[in-house]
Length: 616
Image (cartoon, rainbow, N blue to C red; front, side, top):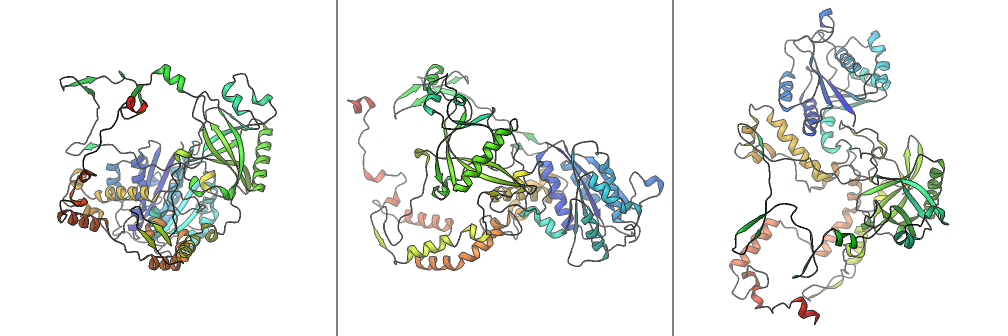
C-alpha cells in the first residue's frame, strides 16, 4: 500500500473551529490505523514564531513549521492542537498565507523521487492582505504542484462571503490538476457524510488462472483425471477472478485495562472434559478430532481418512451451465460479496473472446448460470455471471460481475401473504379492505431507484471506487455512483463516536481519567445528533447529495395511505417490555404469561426414543 503525506496549513487569523474539526478527524483516523507510512506536516501562518528552512534568510516571517513528516500519535496530536491557537498581536500584513502554502509544497518536494500520495490542506478566510499572487513563485506554483501530482484542498469559513483573495485562490486552484475549494464547515461535516473510499485490494480471489468454459463435460471433469476441456469441442477462455464488493468491517479493537498504566488484556482458553468423579480433566488442544452429529444422540468421529472419503473431488474453473433473463433473477440474490471476472492480459485472444461473449449477453439482456470452483477439491459454488461495462477514462472495459447463488437449503426468502384476507398462526382470520394490496403495490413501486436515478443502461458501471488505484484518505465529496453505497451507516456511526471521544479528550491531561469520569455517555457522547436509525442519518452517510431523499419524497403519499389503512401504531421496545412484565405480575396460575419456561404449563412430555428404536 502506498505511503502518504499530508500537509496542513492553518491561517491563525481565521475561525479555526471547522478546520480543527477536519484536522482532528483525518489525524485520528490515521492514529487508529497505526500505519507507519502515513505522515503529517503542519504549518502555522501568523504564528509568533518564524521557523522554516528559509527563516535564516529573513524570508516568510511569522510562518512556523510546527512539525514535518511525522507519524501521528495521540500525544503528538495533543501538542499540535495546543500550537494551533488563534493569532494574537500579529499585524495582518506580517505574513502571507500563499507563501505558507508554497513552503508546504517545498516540504513535499523532498518526496519527489519516492512513491507517495501527496496532499495539502489549507484553511484560510482570505481577510488578511496577500501580496504574493503576482510573484514569480506564484506563477511557477502550478507547474510544481502538478509535477508532484499533489491534491490541494482549500477550506474557507463562510465561503459565501467571498473576497478578493478567495477569488484568487479559486483562480489558482483551476490551474492545479487536483484542486478543490470548499466551505470549511462543509468540509468538516464531510467527514460524517462522505467517509474516505476504501480501495478493494486487487488480489486474485483464485490463486491460479481459471478457465471459463462453455460446453465442457462437467461429469467428466468430476470423475476423469485425463479429461482435458481445451481439447474438447467447447469454448475455453482464460480468466482471473478479483474481489469486487466486500463487506465493510469495523475498526479492529483490543481489550485493555485502563489505569495508571494501560495494559493489554490477553485471553487464554483451556479445555477439559468431565471425569467419572465429576472432576474436570484438562485436555490439550489438538488431542481430539472433529465429530459429525447425525442425530440428537449419535456422533461419529471424522478423522483424516474419513474426511478424504467425504470430500468431493473437484477441479478449478468456471463452467457455464445455462442462461437466464436478467429480470427473472430475484433481487434478494444480489446480497452477497461479489467478484470481477476479467480476461488474462497474457493473450489478446482472451480479451477479445471475453468482450464478445460479454457483449452478446448484454444484447440478450441475460446472465449466465455458472459452476465455480475456486481451488482444487474446494466446494462447488453456483454463481451468476453478469456482463458489465466499466467506464474508465471515457473508455468501456468489458468484464463480468459474479455473485454467488444460494442452494435451496440456503434460501431465506420472505413469505408475503395477501393483505386483504389472511390467517394468522393462531388460526384467526383477518379481513382487510380490498384495496390494501393495491396500496402496498403503489408504495413498493414508489421506491423504484432506477426511476429516481434515471439509469438507462443497467450494465454500465461508472464508479471511481471500482477503478481507483490508490485509497482515498481525505473525506472530500467525490462523484460516486449512488447505486453502490461506499460506506456502512452503522460502522460510520461507530467510527464517528470513537473519533469524538478522542477529539474531546485532547484538552484533558489524562486520557484514563477522562474515560472514567462519571456519566461519561451523558457528558461526552450525548448531543444534538439523532440516533442511527433516523432516516436522515442513514441517507446522509454516503454523500451530500442525499440521493435517496428523492425516493423518500415520492413515497410519502403512498406510505401515508398505507399506514392509515393498516391502522399502524408505533411503540418503543421499552414500553413493550414493561407491558409484558405487567402481564406476568397479574397472570393467573394457568396463564402462559405466568410461566418462565416455554411449554412448562403443557404438562409432561413423552420420553424421546433412541435412534435404534426408531430404525426397528
